[in-house]
View (tube, helix red, strand yellow):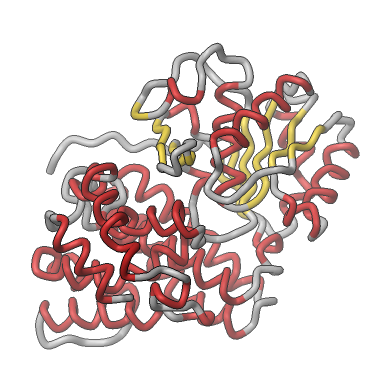
Length: 385
C-alpha cells in the first residue's frame, strides 16, 4: 500500500430544496456581500433569481456575475474576479455546472490576491487564502463542488489546470431539485462524466488509494442504477438525488486519485470543437477502456459488480469484458452522438488533437493503466470517427 493524502470539503449537504438554506449557510460563514457566479442559462431558468431572493431574505446584499462561459476562457475568469472586487464581495457562491463552479473557485482565490491567473496554473502554486466559498451544482457530473481543481482555457485554446487545496469549498450544497430541468442528453452526458471520474480514479496508476476506491465503487453503483431511472422519468427526485450524490463521490475519488487518458483525449474535443465535457468523455470512453483492458482486467472485473449487480461471471476476463461492453452501451444514453463525425470532427483534425494529447496533456497519460504513444492516440480517435 502506498502512502496517500485524502482531502475533502469540511461540509457536504444533500437536501431536496436545500437552496432555501443558502442564506443561513452564508451567514454561518460570516458572508454579508456574496457574489453569485453563474451563467445565462441559470438566470433564464430562474435558479439565479431564486438564489438571490433567498439571500436577500436573509438580509444579505448579493451581487451576480452571470457571464460564465463553457470551458471557462481566461479572459472571462478575469472579468469575474474584477466583478468580485467591484462588488467588494466577502464570499463567493458558485451556482451551476462545472464551468460556473470552476470559475467561482478561482474568483474566491484571486479576489483579494495579488497573483495573476497565470501564476496559479499547476500544482500548489497559489499562495494565501481565499474568500468563503459555497458551491451549488445544478448538473450531476463534474463533481467540481468537492474538488480542489479548476480547469481554465487560455488564449491559445489550451486547457490549464489549477490544483491547490484552497479551492476546496467550505460547503458543497446538493439540491437534486435543481437538476430536474436538465434534458436527457445533458443528464446522460454529465452522469457519464462522473462515471469516468470513478473509473479513472479506481484504475489510477500513480495515486490509487483505498478511500478513493471505496468512493469510486459507490459512485458507479449509484450512477449506473439511477441514470436509467432519470432518463425514464426526469421528475424522479430520488433517482436524481442518487445521481447527484454519485457525481459528488466520483469527484472526491478522482481529485484524490487522478483522472487519466479518457480525460486526456476528451480535452481537445472541448477546446477545439466545444463539445461539452461530459459528452467528450463519453465519446472516447469505450475505445480507451478497450485499449486499457490488457492492464486493467482485474480492476474492471471488480467494477463490473458495481454496474452489473447480481450477474455472475465465469472468469475475471469475462467480467472485465462485460464491464467494458456495458460502458460502451451507456455511451449513447440520452441520444448522445457516438461518432466524432457527427459533431463536425474530420480526419484532418485528428493529427492535431493526437499531438496535443501526447505533448500537452501527458500528465494524464502518466496515470493511465497503459502508456499511449502518438500512433495509438491517433488510432483511438480514428476508431470513433
